[in-house]
Amino acid sequence: MKELLKEAIDIFLSLREVKTRDKHMSGFVEILRKNTPDGLILKKEIPIEETEYRSKKWDHSVWNDETWTTVIEFKSLDKSPGNNSNNRMEEAMGCAWRNKTSFPDRKRGYWFVGVNLPELYRERWILFLNHCLTVGLYDAVCCILLDEQGQPSHPTGMAPDEFFVKLFP
Image (cartoon, rainbow, N blue to C red; front, side, top):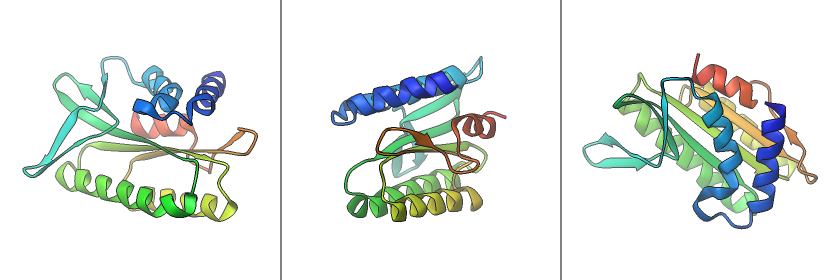
């Protein structure tokens, strides 16, 4: 996992200025692909009809034959955390809540990469992601916090390997 994570971070850092079609997250998606259990199929941006009035294209969904079992969002925050954190958090909560109320038996995962965030925003994100886990909005959260040299750290319980254990027990 350590080598895959290093490769994913290198891809992320090299492509983070060009966020076209989430290519900057492709290394992390490859980690997901390699950790998706045999027999399950990983799909990208498939509309999930959550209510009669709303469908959402989650970044990735995991399928067992014709039934989706898990949805996963991949998000990053690099510039202007003061302007973007609240919107990103509201989006994460709203999407998870809508999905959970329609499909309480399905799993939801959130993969977050924060780049060189000021300490105040690092702390806010850790509190927020822990809250999402505690209240059951997400079943698994991966939080990768990169410092100014691109070195990763993970809050307790939010490392990539822990994410997969929770999502695919």
